[in-house]
Image 1 (tube, rainbow, N blue to C red):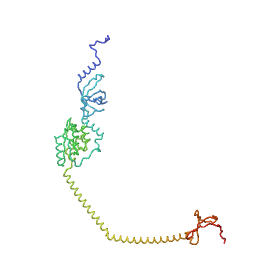
Image 2: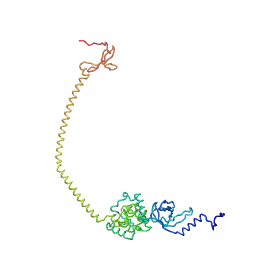
Image 3: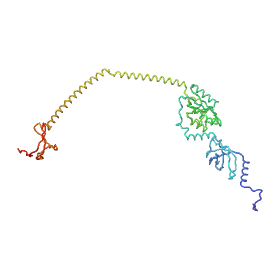
Image 4: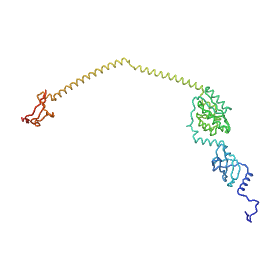
Length: 411
């Protein structure tokens, strides 16, 4: 390649890649690491898990990336509009020749990172309904066994055991030791909750520890612990820290105790209170039974005063039965006489209408011999017709010799 005659002679000619590389090396050497404050915008997370965003103020902005190896240590999740202070270095993305801020650490501005993570998780779980009163389960009145998930060292386990044994010496106590502080504590607590829930006799769980700073209590603000408490087979009482300490575990648990001592008092009744309660119930039951007996006695006495001698009642009933029997007999006889009279009258009327009675008076009935039809008119007869005459006593066969029609006399 030949240079134009008017260009100054150069010792070397750089490619674009070489130029970008020199710029990147110069920036690394001159600036090194530094802290930058700004507002996050255009935040996105691709499948790689890296954080890509812009960091801006009122006048300028710069692209930034926080690789997964660094961002997985954050207890909170960055959001658009969040004011942060980041530590990183400036570099040149050689492929595009663009300046880019490589972030190694990030802190929210104004609100601590742990407090911000707490508020974010609290908001998300509340939206899912994990804090709702409707899903909280009541504690059993007298559990067969109490499960405890806490550390074996410290005052918490001592207070729990002392109070439980003082209130209910016979209750079974199952302790699952766990780490309650540090990076490994959340996973340990989740495993313990799962294991102890499998014990059939355990009817209630206490999970917690003594007081401390927000960092000390952070294991109980872990999302895994919160979901393990919500998914436990039995009701869970959270006893984390002191009364002023509130953790995510406290909000998710079925009951929150301000201290481990209060948690122990919640899950089992005091035997002395039980004895006193049983005595009151026995006295009340006895008095109630006595009152019921007295009321029944008074009622029975009142009924006895109004109760007649059953022999008198029986005699009165016998007299009534005799009276009714006589009345029924008289009525039946009267109806029988009336029926006889009606029958006799009907028979007489029938006798008067009977054709036999007419025959007794000398009349006869003429019927045709072939059809047995009654002959009512002589005009229907012809000489030679055969008839059968019926008399009051007997019949006779005759032949018609001279049928004549007699007109009635005019008088």
